[in-house]
Length: 372
Ligand SMILES: *Cc1c(COP(=O)(O)O)cnc(C)c1O
Image (cartoon, rainbow, N blue to C red; front, side):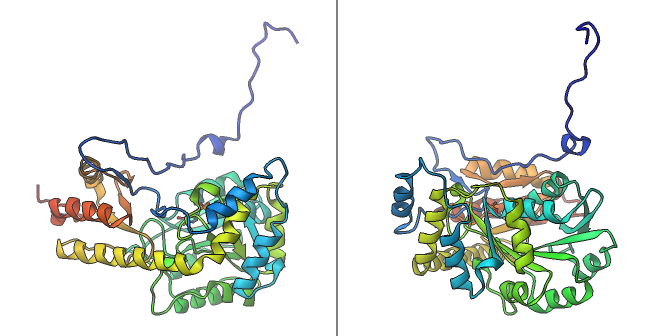
């Protein structure tokens, strides 16, 4: 070919170029005048649990070797803890990776994935990467999934439905009765994914029994993560429990050796440290409830907060709230023009949030309120 002819360059698929970018929670910039806190990524504010660092350090000593590709020790520990079979468990580099593999395994171009919106920002990206089409069903006014509308949005092309409980970023959890009614209304060849990333923080009178559903029905899976309650966000490890054929399809699509030896060892050690873990989770839940009560005292109403975060629906006041928080030393997670998600952190960090919120009059943030 002559070099003078115009040559075309490689181009990604159009939908990849158009895909929204995942916006990670920003870390704070250290300052001299105030202590700064990162409340933007729903991380666990506490350092690794006893025994976990040691287990990861032992795994470091053999980093010249590939990890166990089947993550058998970790999957066995999970299966034992949850009372399921080994072949009903798949692990991945975070539950987001598991979602990618699951969509890749079940969706062809043009297939539809029904999801609530606004929900976890990784979902639309994962759906696009898989070549599928997202069908977004608006949340109700109080930040909950509209399950009847989601059931009605299922078409012949639907292969997967995503349920996020508690919903990131708004906070409410689904209930057992509403999920069971939803499942009864959805075709049995549609995979229903229950994303329980914040399960450990839920205090509900009618909690969803995700593992029970995932092991008693042929089309339900739960995804969970070690990134939030277990405090291993930096190691990237999560898991799926579901019918063996679905778990197997997810494993088949996984990257070989994706979950590192460090992550496997730390996750196993974390399961052994659950007594301390659940004490910490309980203290974060107590802090969450203190924050929600403090916000109510200051006149704020937030959606039911069942995760380790609270949601402020602020509309065009979002930037103002973010700036006030930043000034006070806390970095939050803005969703431009919609609102702000604030993670529950150390008690001192939560105190800063309460001060910031008290100083901003909530009535000025209500939608449709014209008060200047
Ligand atoms: C944080 C989060 C996850 C977990 O992601 P990892 O990839 O395991 O870190 C999954 N789902 C939701 C809704 C989340 O907020």
